[in-house]
Image 1 (cartoon, helix red, strand yellow):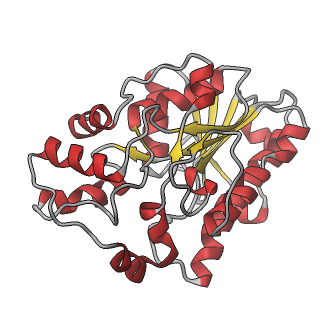
Image 2 (tube, rainbow, N blue to C red):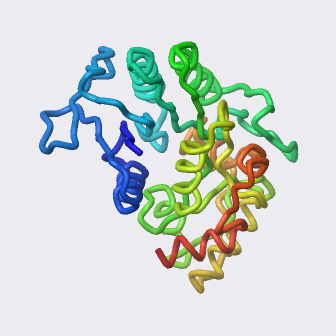
Length: 296
């Protein structure tokens, strides 16, 4: 198959491109600079600028672009978080509608769309989006797919939890306190903490691309959701480190503002659509996903 990747320079983009090429697929990478090789195509999503003819006849367009959410959310940075996701998705969706054969269009999304704190409520893809900045971003992000859908493309949005891999920036930040013996639960620890191994995330992207019945939102999270306390204990065990230095919720809120809710808020997300189409997880539990991350 022929894939076109936006956000190919990020951690997930590099991993997906490598995985696809290794398996014999063709990959074109969208870049915002002068292309340095034949598999790169220049685009400017802020201006909606991408030449459909340069893509040829792709099977799948994948958008993994987006500014890092793990920084202080100043008003200016909120705009960057939103626009870096919406403009890239909208550009791909518009181009999909101009291609002779409608491709599959997949965008990364996030479980943060379900709201700040959902408690013990089970969150499937049919659950309503919640309130908060990231919920608003997800509405616009996924809504930007609509032109592609209207033009005949099958579209999907992967609502992904924290991807676990030893090279993943988010996992490195989460595991650093444990490596120096200062790890512990975040806030109360009772909040559900959605994660997925990199291996299963890669497999999920390809599964969605290849299965015609899958469309709309798709949760990319463990089928057996765990709490932050369970994650903490499993990570400490895997690293052979203690886990007795909890981080109080008020400290996180003071330091991180609304972003703290991405770590403190409970999101019991279940990958109902993947499972209903017989997707099997290589690492279905927190301990197995962490083991895979640490040995990758």
